[in-house]
Amino acid sequence: MNPRHHLDQATVVSFAAGALSQEMAAVAATHIEVCRLCRERLSEAERIGGALLGQQQPAADADAARGARLREAMLDLLEEEPKLEADAADGRLRSTDAPVDADCLPRPLQPYFGRSWRALRWRWMAPGVHMIRAARGSGDTLILLKIAPGKSMPIHSHQGTELTQILQGAYDDALGHYAPGDVADLDNEIQHQPITAPGVPCVCVAALDAPLRFPGWLARKLQPLVGL
Image (cartoon, rainbow, N blue to C red; front, side, top):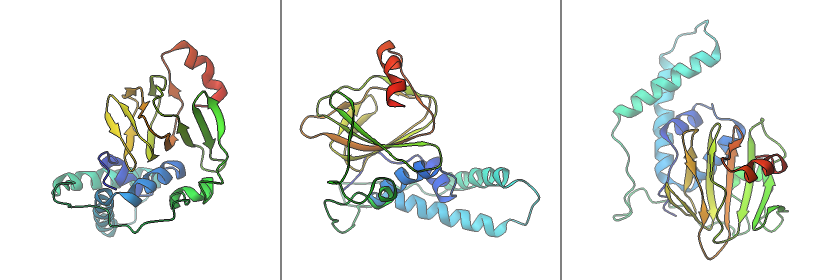
């Protein structure tokens, strides 16, 4: 697997600092598990974070404020480091993970959805769209989505952050083609309309820290029913 869409550097730093919610961290970890490039970036962020922590003296500041300053310092230092680049042509930074049981969900998702694909109990959400919402977590929304091939989803933007990892199938939107292993790391400035690729259903896991924003009146009417 050679993902083309990766986590934003700020997301990697927040993951390394333990600053993501449980739900966001689960999606980020699912991507990192299959993406060697993001594992390299995470290792670098952890190295820099450890060095910065070692230089810090005990302070009376609130933990949240100190953590924010630490993440900013980590990002500043990472910008000075040589950038890592995935190069499919010569095989650099390819994942060398061993094959896994085809019925096993990714390990970071198992505490929320169980271990087995076959055991999943999908809930009908709309024609061609099924969903499973995680019952546990810290407050953000974590869902599995299964969308039929060739289906256009409603155009939408985000009131907060959306982190979506493709597990099976694929979709296209204005940002590009997203296939298994790719992650969409989106903020409230992005508006898009995913259209699933032909062939097989698109299955993805998504974490959201705020409801979506739909410009269409029908999608807005249905939004309370699906809870997104």
